[in-house]
Image 1 (cartoon, rainbow, N blue to C red):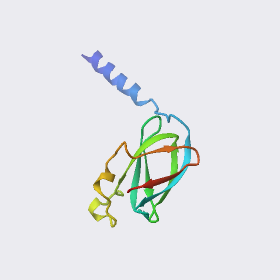
Image 2: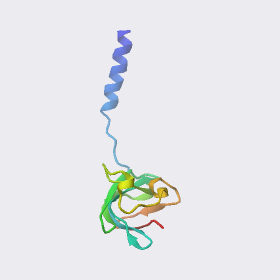
Image 3: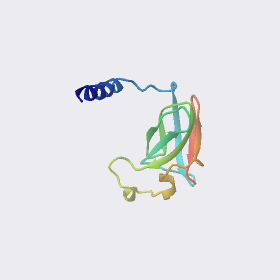
Image 4: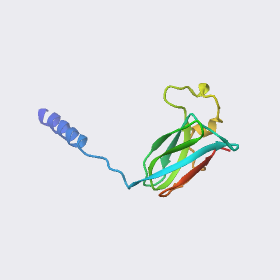
Length: 120
């Protein structure tokens, strides 16, 4: 019994030491979120990879702009409320469909990409 316990603990310790690496080199991206031509800010834009990228969140500024790094590839995106803010408290309410991932809303990230996220 002790032997089995030691083996399970040993495997657990070995598994904790492995590093998860990125599947590519991050590139700088910037963009703007709009709805009906108006900037949408004070939200968080979440990119969900459809291939080799990594999930990433960007805080969108009041003027609708965001910037950061992503690995090149294809991403689905959705919005969420900033940490500690209930969606009902967000001043500019967006339709609920934008708070859910949807494969109909995708972008391709390339080096130097300027992403136009339109929530229409």
